[in-house]
Image 1 (cartoon, rainbow, N blue to C red):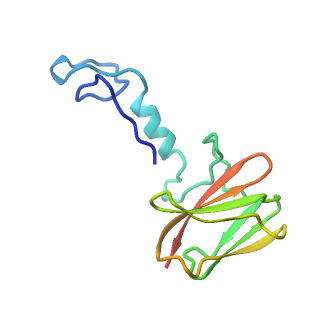
Image 2: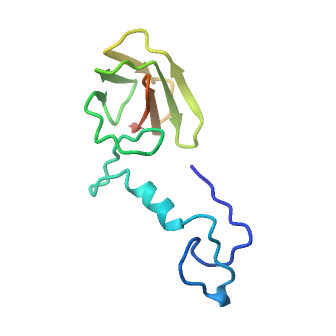
Length: 138
């Protein structure tokens, strides 16, 4: 979650070309349209989330990494042709609930039996990038 605070702005769209004086000053510190596009471009038209790297570039479904089942119950399986050097699981509030270094390469399981149902974000770290995947616990 990213919070943007607008200083000295009115009730206008940040970065808008048109200035409407009756609504106050238009802040030009950033473009709200660009920020929203950078969020939505991570999803396909069907709503499926693509993997993204730390710099926000799309990694078209990262075929070298597979996670299942989704939704999950007591564990998540990660299979990868890339070397995963660490992983973190975050809850929907951004709290880190699981973290570790895999004990094997290629495939490993993440124990999730003690987690409540909800939405989670798995962050997988390789030697040159960090990939994220949205998962749901039943």
